[in-house]
Image 1: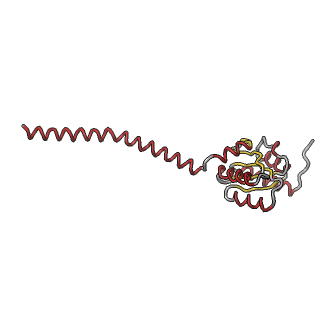
Image 2: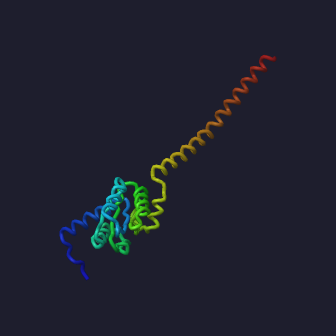
Length: 180
């Protein structure tokens, strides 16, 4: 069966969603059945700077995902679906969604897309359990600095040892010169 022709407003919505799929670092699909407008506003505020949260019709979101070259999400487009398009730190956005879902059990994380691969709800939770990017980078920098400091001390040791030996020899000669 051929696809039905898409009206201009729906075509524009699909094109906009497809662009969001393409430009997002990650996309998390959620079910928001039962959440109030106030709770959705609260969720959007909590994700501000990290992700945009968009309610979309499943048929339009499916078409947009396909247009953006994303596969494997079709089974997630059931029930009322909202998409969190992550433009900031993926870990922070996942934490925001996880924490909101803990406080508001009506928000259900279905899964998503990260680095072009489909991920499950459990994998979104594992992302949320990671430390923020800045913390991981700081730990990496600290480890690298410690290794560089050890290397510098290792390279410095033969020089300082040689200097101490030379000073001891000089001192020994001076003493022998005074005795003779």
